[in-house]
Length: 355
Image (cartoon, rainbow, N blue to C red; front, side):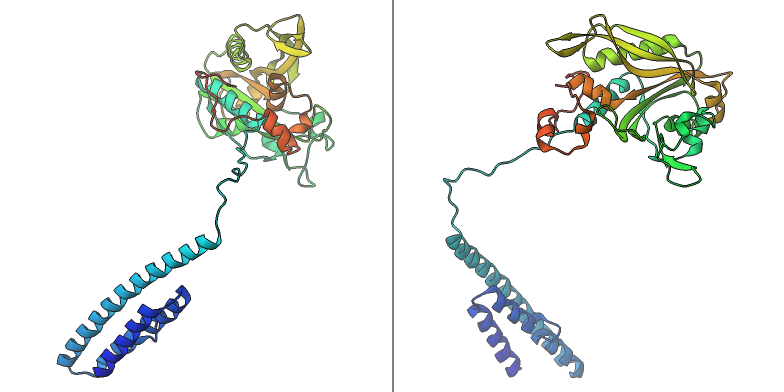
């Protein structure tokens, strides 16, 4: 045991005299490593008698505690010394101005989706989502679209497979079919999301955002549709009154179908929504076609309802005075800094949507 005590004292002396964290790490391995001092001593216990083994094990454990305590103490001292030396070398000039800190902005499209969701949630609508990559069945067939409809042409739709059975959805209407198939009426949903069409100019892009609305229940009428849209448009544009008209139109998935116009006027080269004698088309809508209900496993003799589709990008352009749809997708920080919104200012009907 004399050799043991002598070796222990040597290691304690090395620990006390270590000058850096690197030196300390070398000593740590010599003491606590797999082939270090302590493990080597523990291995010798197997050759001792039970009585000697007990006494020797006790001494090794005491030595381990001493060395561990000394190691931790020396490690703290060396860290403090090294930090102090680094601070001396790396002096900060407190007179320098602080670094520029930029807070990100919420994109107008994301803001408008939040605004619309907030409005419809107030009247009992829930938000549903669906896949961007759709099948021909959900995108066209289930929505009562004829085989020869122009929308199914390749110059209007992005097909993924040559057999034209898989595509990028051209609207968010497939979500209403998926929702009805997985549940039972009544249904009251909105479905915002990305949509894709082969078109590109100042007011059209190959990828854009659309919101589908659906309300299915017993005894739903066009009157409910008009009341719902009137409420939404007034809340969204934050006006007390709105001029609104329904023009007869045609969509395969609704019957009757209509396009909705709202009144506006130009004041100082800006559009003022809700007043004036000019009309602006804003969305399409109608009563859900009985064939769509049948394809969605809903009995059209018991249930009926309305649906509407809104261009989210178009609403953002109208409300916030953005002239070119393509600027939404150019990733220009200056543009986003101008048109973007405070990330902490979540839109609600109580505080104001676009506060």
